[in-house]
Image (cartoon, rainbow, N blue to C red; front, side, top):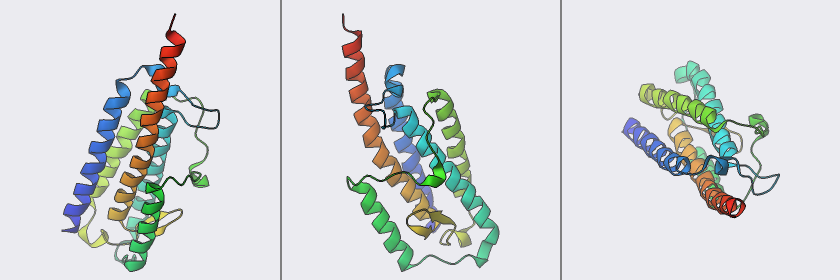
Length: 186
């Protein structure tokens, strides 16, 4: 039952990503690097941020899994922490990316970012599919703000985090397309 929920959560996450990437890749390549202000991210930078946060999380979980049955089970406290995190992401509240992720590079190659993100998604899929049932409800993930969560909560967070940034990407695509129309007009 837990594995089914975990797989459904992952499949929804990946379908969301594929739909957004289809939208992004239909745009002029210049739009992918458009920044509305010097201190704001481009589409390529947002994709990099999503990829990096997922990759670091996956690596952390792989390491924690070595603890096996010694890991504590998540309970009500983890549910509350995850719910607060989720509400924060669904709100218009803006917060800085955790320092552990480092700075997002200015000059990125969008294709390279997506290639790397595809690879980390394959790793996540493998992790989800091979996670032993007895570890699904264990504290295998540590979110910088919400603390220890289980794998299903982590993948659900990835969805919320993705959704939070997907709306940002869509706004950027629209603004970037407007800017390229203005700059390419005779």
